[in-house]
Image 1 (cartoon, helix red, strand yellow):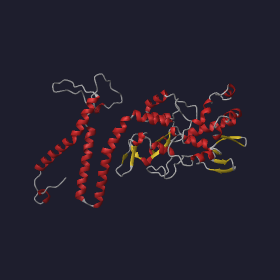
Image 2: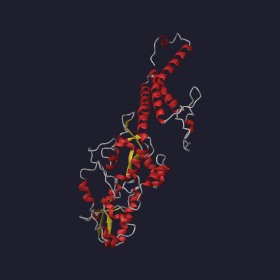
Image 3: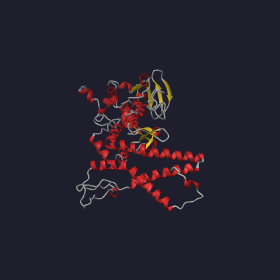
Image 4: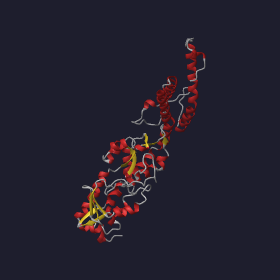
Length: 402
């Protein structure tokens, strides 16, 4: 506990710096084998982010490398993941989390697909990138502001460096205070501020204001911002944290899988049972086309077309659940895909609740393949009777498999 005298040394608004060494959290998987040794070494290296100047304090060796701060990479071969032998430790940690692993599917080419939780669609694992939810440029500016404060207020600097562990983050070198390489790289790799999104979303997000960006995203929007408000966000420090010391990425990830929990099962089923099989069939068509087998190509093409038409008909079917009499319409609802009130044979309304609707859909879905097969057979039989036999066509006398 600080004494009153010590507390008085902390300028108003800067009280958060007392816990600065606990603000950034390292990834908990995939760290290099030698990381313990590396961080001790980096605590003795000065880094100036604007110029890229590096000073090794023990040897007083000067060099320049603006890219000295980056993602901590996993030891090669120890933590393989699709598309990278040495992924960033934060990327590997996020990839192995159960919420993502539970929805992973195999693509038509045998690769791995997972959802991009920024825009919702499945993407290749290789296209997922480690993105700073709170832009790294903002984090860096706040770090530099703290270092500048040390050089402006010597009393404040002396107090801060008496706190346990602060000498790993800040050093006084020849009368001037600097942030160490460890100080900058720990905040760059804070696992609570990093999530996995596809490269396209990452490029589009760039260094946008994080709250404006969330507001514009259909999977987040005002609802997510209201949720953040309830978490009592603290924006005074280097990293934006909740009252429970959770970073924006962690909050967004947990909120997404909770708020869009149905996405885990519905999207996975859609892609694994419809999208991927269609892609595989399309690849077979392309393969047979390349072989020059015209008859087989036509047969496969028609099979592919039949499945596409079936999927289209399912989308066009107006099988939405009827709205109850006490339910008010929502401005964002698409009422054109909603059934009107159901009427029985006597003209009386049928009350349908969610559970009844769900059970009816499951039963009907199981019957559709048989019903479709019967309808197709009927149409083929009618077409066969309408067609005049062609004696020159020998295939008409045999049984040609479809």
